[in-house]
Amino acid sequence: MYNLLIIYLIGMLGIQKAIPVGIILNIPPQSICLMTILGASTVVIVIYMLGSKVRVFVLRRMNGNRLNMKKMKINKLILKFGVIGLGLLGTLIMGSHITTLIGLMVVNEKTKLLVWIIIGILFWTTILTAVAELSFELFKRFNFFHDFISISKKL
Image 1 (cartoon, helix red, strand yellow):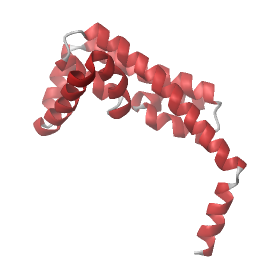
Image 2 (cartoon, one colour):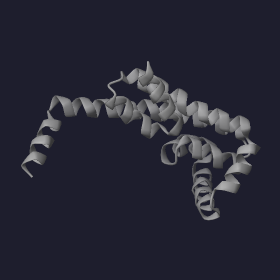
Image 3 (cartoon, one colour):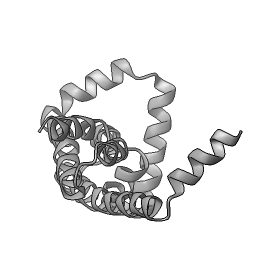
Image 4 (spheres, helix red, strand yellow):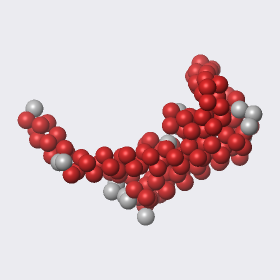
């Protein structure tokens, strides 16, 4: 029970962080995927609902240089792939919360952006959870952990 809450809370920080923690905690992949999606989506929806208040906070807190770099990345994604590409690729490259924060400052179609970011969260969480779980199972099946531990003991 508490493990699922942990995955939900870590999912709020980013999908790439929650999935390995869930696998280490030996949580079923379906639960990891669901709780990570819920956590990441919660943050995105809260940022979207707060809108201008979050924008003012970010502009005050972020260094102008860092903010400009993130805006440049997002502008490149928008020019190359549009709002759909930003929602799908930005979620993987920069994280869903950063994509939402800066995307709301740059994009005019805010609702469309929200929908595509949530679709990106669903897509990438499912893919990354499956890849991580399969990789972990391969490591266990072929005993890579044992080989790694025995090699490190010899050194």
